[in-house]
Image 1 (cartoon, rainbow, N blue to C red):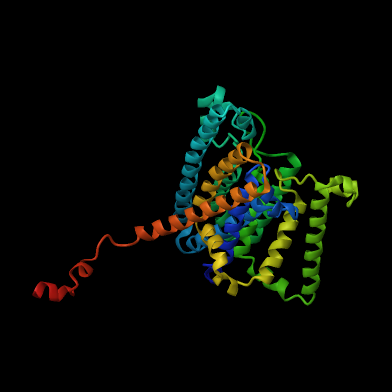
Image 2 (spheres, rainbow, N blue to C red; image 1 turned 90 degrees about the horizontal axis):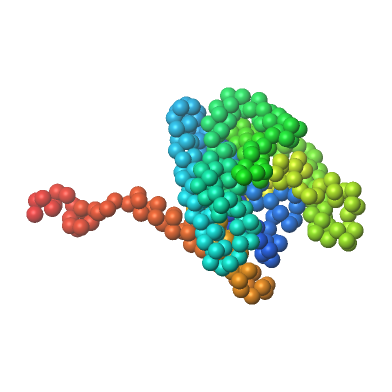
Length: 391
């Protein structure tokens, strides 16, 4: 397991996918944005959220799995909870500023519909109560659901890793069992002032744990799959399923065209995002299987300059995600107050991605400065230590 983790450390595919997921989430979070028609969710059953959660679990397992093996549960749990606190602090700052910003803009622009559209209705009549429920992760303002979900998943990661390093297949089976039990018995977290979480943690943990399982112990199973003589048949089946998902998804946007029978369309649409529909999981696994086959770890494309912004955004995903939440609100405000044209939609989308990329590069640069010494004595004097005292 240590050897597998060492082989996966520094895999740029993860950074690239996290970067694209952050961009897609921003585009999807701008309501009525024409450019969002180009994101993952419009070409199949799964979307950017699925990618974000899966890669997050995979990356977290690589980062903390080796620590669990070498230093034990207690040390690893403290390091994970330190990261969890950073995520929670980012959420609280984001939540407080975000809902107050929405309330302020709605009052100043005389557009109270914004408050309901972004699901912060309680901030007007019950400000303190809304803030308290926000601290408890029970409020559900629009576009913060992914970060809320990730906080819960990181909270259980120490126990997931503890099981993975000892009984990985049993732990994976437990995750699958929890997924089906939550769907069968309708388990979910309640939200304030009513309703439930947009993303059911009892179901979405499946993708997170699946990512961790593949990072820690799924290598043997993956190699066995790739050694199959009928691997071409398996790839063909994956391509056919992706094509089927594409047809059904597109047909759902144009029901009057009659491309897909109503019975078949109703079985797969609307796509159950709250409880992570099984056909959604299967679609994502088909995508992951084909991507891993076509893009090896040492792919030469990682040196392309055009991919560097996405890779950098993946490396600094938390700051980029937080920036994207504010930018999605700002983009929506620009679109509803300015000219409603395709050019404006493209301009808002490109500007948001450029700003998110700028945030990623700034955070990366700032981290490098923290590791540089404040001054160098030898560089200031221009002399070696012995020569300086001798002189």
